[in-house]
Every structure is written in C-alpha cells, then in structure tokens.
Image 1 (cartoon, helix red, strand yellow):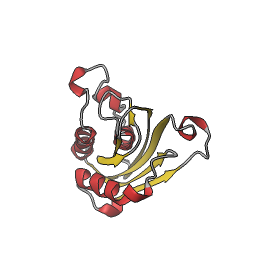
Image 2 (cartoon, one colour):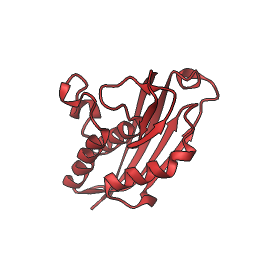
Image 3 (cartoon, rainbow, N blue to C red):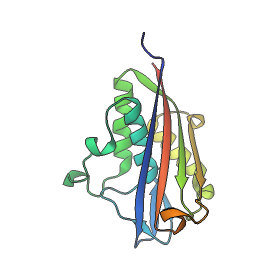
Amino acid sequence: MTAAFRIGQGYDVHAFAPGDHLLLGGVRVAHDAGVIAHSDGDVVIHALCDAMLGALALGDIGQHFPPNDPRWNGSDSRHFLRHCAGLILDAGWRLGNADITVICERPKIGPHREAIRSALADVLGVALAQVSVKATTTEGLGFEGRREGIAAMAIVLLVAA
C-alpha cells in the first residue's frame, strides 16, 4: 500500500553579521544586520527546502547545493526552492501545506508575514492558504535571544498527486 501523505521537517540557522537587511522567504527585510552564509542566507527558504527534501527522503539542502561548491556562493535561495518544488512534482506528489516558524527577537516578522507568505506561494505555485508563516521569540534565551542570529523551522505535508 502506498501512503497518501508524506511529512517533512526542516530547520536552519544563520549568525548575524554586518549588513542592513535579511532575506526571509525571498522578501528583503530591513534590519540592522545581515547574515553569514554561503548563499543569500534565507533561513525561511532553507528550512522549507529541508522539509520538502525530508518528506521525499532525498537528504538535505547541503547535499543538493553543497556549501563548498562555488556555484552556489551568494545564490538566490528561490532557485533552491524551485528545485525542491520540481522534485516534489517529479516524484508524483503535490504540496498540501507548509508551516514555517521564524525564531528571532528582531526583526519583527509580523509586518512582513503576508509578503513572505505571498512570495513563497508564488515561487511554489500554490494557493496562499497553503503557506503559513509565523514567528516567536525565545524570551531572551539562547543565541536568538542574545540577538546573535536567526532561525527557522518548517513542516510540510505532501499529498499524492
């Protein structure tokens, strides 16, 4: 019997560095720091890609886009997301929904939530209702609480096409 559903989860983190913005879900968000990253450092998309790849049992984003490969230096993470979306379709699945949580003290995600949802839905070719973005702080605890970096978690549900 073939399963009708598959679930994957992903997590990504980047340390803050000098800069004036972050990319979150493909959206440029003004901030008093950037991130240290090989690609564009979009924690939202990186976590989402890992969730998608996990649901397909195809490893992680580092296996598909190795950080030591100069081709991906400074890459737009939306390229990674399109690749993962294509793998889902090629394997005979479709995205049921994606649920993403951004973990940071700053920047505040609320003012950017709908733009991030819309950008992700657009790249994935799905309805806005299939993409959830929310945020939390760590109440001052851990690296996020000390404002040393930003993290994101993602869960996806794939449905047999």
